[in-house]
Image (tube, rainbow over all chains, first blue to last red; front, side, top):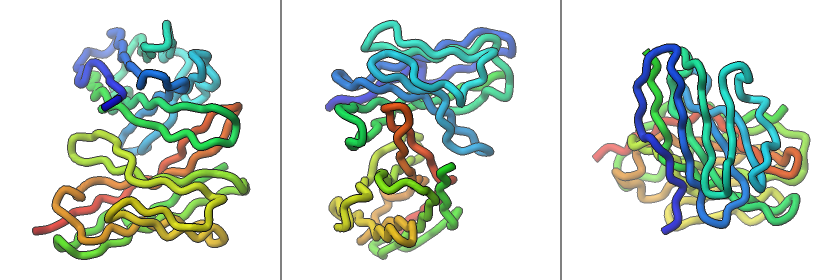
Length: 117
Length: 116
């Protein structure tokens, strides 16, 4: 049963600290997405990758957030320095694109619940 | 810009009843995809059902079915014979193609409670 995995599941940190969240996409998937969920804003897309290349990170605060894919089995989302307003659940999702226009269902990981004090 | 609207913040029904969750969206595109995701208290996002806009036939998955009205830009979810395990937040999502990848835009969600 292939699943997207995320670590850690929960993270509590203090303002100013660096936070790194990790995601392992489903084997064989070539797209990875990072979403943030808050009560106020709902689900927001932060960044996405295709074949490990970042295609769009316009939803991500550039000054403190960064997203990378060191290899096909690992995606990371880093916040440095963290702020209380970053408290949210961060989801990673992966999917597979063959050609433009074809359906690409995104499968979500369990999320990382981040609390910044 | 594409938007997705779920007009029912909360709904509550008795077990075994049928419930319909509403979703409307706004887009100028002709080819797109629509999804319903379920988020139980565990916070896991679980795909419930998906619909390709070029298909006229409504998608069904066991007790879950959709009523897709393309002209009206409406995409409602019907849950038949509701079960306690259906209690969750339900998100309607629109998928658009941007630069070769497909991005989901979510509605604000409907909190569904199934009562015993």
